[in-house]
Length: 129
Image (cartoon, rainbow, N blue to C red; front, side):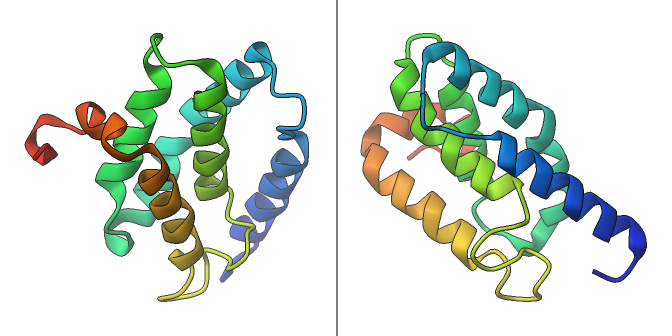
């Protein structure tokens, strides 16, 4: 946090995090959280840039939640992980050099393991095996 602008944005993100409660998990609530992901994911990926090696996985997860054939309760799990990635206030703050994205990577890796091959078709074509 080198400047005041980043500090102000951090406090705004904390406020957004407080509003994101996955306790009820109704379909409409999950859809609202999908909108939050849509609005903030691309900014986060731009900021993260070359610091992360799992951007293709993030894109696959985003494509997964946009698929109308996927059940809303499965989307809720993915949305929770993407919100964790987007919001910089987490176990290891994203602003810490070298280590800031390790916890995000752990959450995304666990989700990828959970979803398994179900996620394969959602990767961009050049990353499919």
